[in-house]
Length: 149
Length: 394
Image 1 (cartoon, one colour):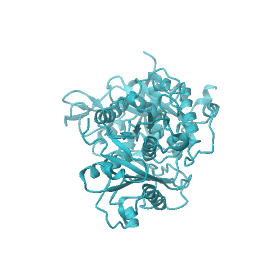
Image 2 (tube, chains in turn yellow, green; image 1 turned 180 degrees about the vertical axis):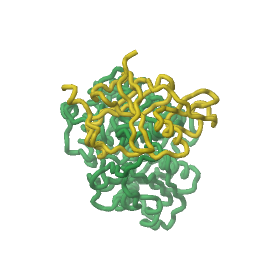
Image 3 (cartoon, rainbow over the protein chains, first blue to last red; image 1 turned 45 degrees about the vertical axis):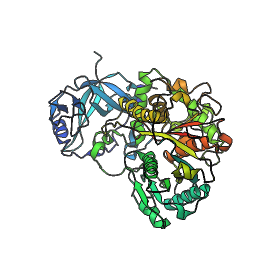
Image 4 (cartoon, rainbow over the protein chains, first blue to last red; image 1 turned 90 degrees about the vertical axis):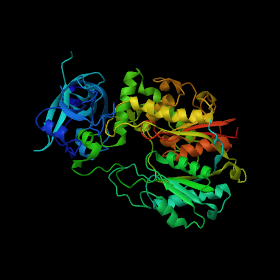
């Protein structure tokens, strides 16, 4: 398959807009500024995502959001061929990936693999965060391939 | 060992009509299944004094209407008007296996004599996962914007991780799909009873969410199944050969909602449930004659086989090869066809088949000399419960 044929067409996809809540607001506030910030336990240092009321490592409730570098590796992925979610039908086939960040092991972030053929989604590939504004309030952290290191 | 082992038994079992999608209200299916189980036991409806279920519709984006898309305990009470009803419960966290366990506990506590548990599953006409709306709330705010629309994709990323981590080949899963289909071809109640499936069909089928192809996904149906549970003493006076509950367990770990793709949880959750079941019953995986392991997606069987202790981590796709899971194999598996080939009625059909096998009532798909029967009634990665049934008390 030629590379261009393996590029997912995201142009006609209307992504559902995340609705922040009391636990997740700082994540979205940071993303709007182009910063990836994750919840970190101030007691044991554990990073976690999605945000949770307590540290899943030590049960501390002393949690703060801290900026983290957006470099990591693909931990898991799926290539979607079936429009289970009709909103994403125009992009099929597309790669949904799970990323483990170098600086925040244990936190797993979902994303899509942008600007690359979906066939490039493989466990262990190097990726870096990019920010994709959805509207005036919400910016989505996303991922693209990074140089191997 | 558990002092209450073999004090409760599954007696009768019942089924509704099973159709591809909704043609009559779900309550009518549930009623057929419950009546069937009561008749199978040789009881009168007025004997039933306990009710338990897990009324959930896994399809998202549909209105929850009691009697149409779910059948609650309230709905069943309204329909049956049981004169001697003395106990009921509706569970939330551990799927239908939790309702069965609560009924066992109620019988052990002596607060009812004959409990009925049913699972009714709706398949709405039109789109199963109906995901309208411009917003993503709760845990979905971190997944839905990236096109993780249904449970399949969350399971698919974990399976991709498993395949890569253990250097395994998804084509080996054909053995599971094809073997379970052969079992379904011996089960007149299975949705795919009359439809064969070959290895070539599996390998050439369309991809849904890589690594899952069409035949890695169960078949959504509209239908219900039900069982009658009673004390061992009472069960011996009823018509069917009892299937004694030797032990059970439930998962004691849970992943943070919205954190998907991780495999660490399935071993922890599945093994915690199985450990309770092995310890309570005194049996080990080597003692098991026949197993039913929940298969909403094929990979759940892999997680089950590994976390319950039937094989080592990363070995399950090799374990299922070479005839091991056939009816005459070392570990006959999902002998009714499983959710992949019999239909998506969640775990109660697995529990029914586990009971029928030790009762010697599995007809054409009966495993010879089945005395110890294991059931994993839901995916260990999500809502695991496990059971052990035996043909006689010990």
